[in-house]
Image 1 (cartoon, one colour):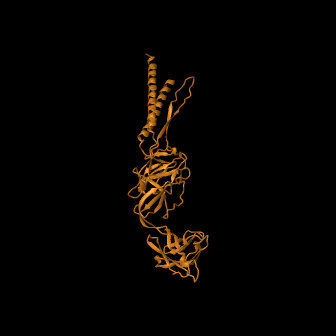
Image 2 (tube, rainbow, N blue to C red):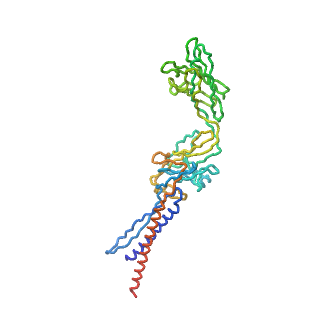
Image 3 (cartoon, rainbow, N blue to C red):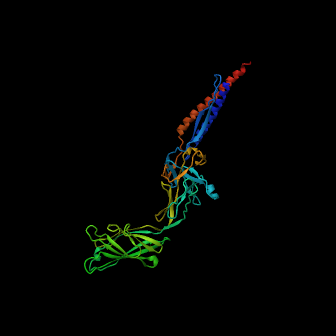
Length: 433
């Protein structure tokens, strides 16, 4: 009987609009929740085939979907570990309870934003208990190769705020001008000393003592110097001796013409470097390429250390941590050096909306979402990581309130259908009277 199907359709309409109102309520309640993804409810009609010219109402069904691929606006914050993803991709996180349990690899969850702070154990964690995950770097700051289709290589990001670090010096660039007048006949043949500080493998300060001694000819100019290098860490032992000859032509005057090793490592003309062995290992000294004005020169009558630069640093304390746009976690020390300690990848899936939604704005991959892949931030289809930022809720309150009005009217209309069917059934019952 068609009138009975009308009653069923009205009930289905009430249920469908109740589901839509529940989604709207959730969206409005989370309008101030960072990283919240709104829920959308769609209706699909149900059609029942009739017979004998009569029509049976099929009613309506509702389906709800969380729109994970919709992003809220980014707002700035004052913390370098407030993170948000700008564009496609999600941050890998895990639950602090799993980290504290220490039962092996932690389960990976995904989120698009988080306010991370170091806890008592140094883990970067949100107030809700989400711990940021990343790939650990080697001591030299390089990130090893990890599999990209599994979370097996990810570890909770742990910051050792009491960490001390020192970088050994492995390269020194010498920019020094030697006085051309000292290689002329009759000069005093004065040795020009130069001290260069470097840091050993334990962060201690040591010194390279470099002496430049001119070759004084009986007549004319030799344009030749002897460079002797001593290492304080080896009691002042000579670790390199070289004969330097300079050009005096109009086009190349004052530049290196040749470098002849007496002892120590060979001179590489392609790079302008020599390698000497200090107490802690080999060290590259860049003295300049032949025929160029960089490095060692011989001009005029003054000895001038113009530019001396080196890598390495003394022992320092960690002062801050920051995540750059490519997901690299940098630790900054009070000596001014910065070291990469982790890399946070961005996780991408073919269908983000197919993931399983969990508490605290986290999601878990599922068969419906497709297989995930861990990208370097800014590579492939992914966006970049923004520090000092949070992602606002994707809820548009004005749109939700408009949908609420429509839902209320639709619910009332379906209730009116049920009331009308009830009155018609009452009239049917009254026929017997």
